[in-house]
Image: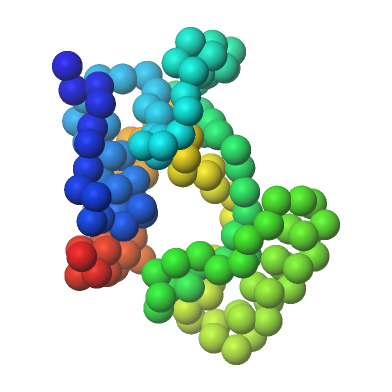
Length: 150
């Protein structure tokens, strides 16, 4: 039925996420869930949790964490934290320090992201991401980088 997608084990985690999002965009769905192969998922509980939000097309579901910023040269996030004092303290300071030293490569400051072992995205979020993958120059460079790193 196409509701489970298995990806190449050699691909990077971020590459797998992008491939899954692109695949989902070719299907009709209300929400998608990405999970690690070793994560324990209780399907009924997951469906109830997501349904609680009315299958909102703008859904971002999962355990959120924070990165200090994005390094465009290395194509990866840096800094990591979960508590408010770390996010507004250490992560913000780390981004400001890197930005003062290497401004062009570190424009993106602290941002939240759902941890990949179990994240859900609504159809509108998936559509927005896919649209940006083909129009946003930094995301086009990221995809080229991911393809070259295989």
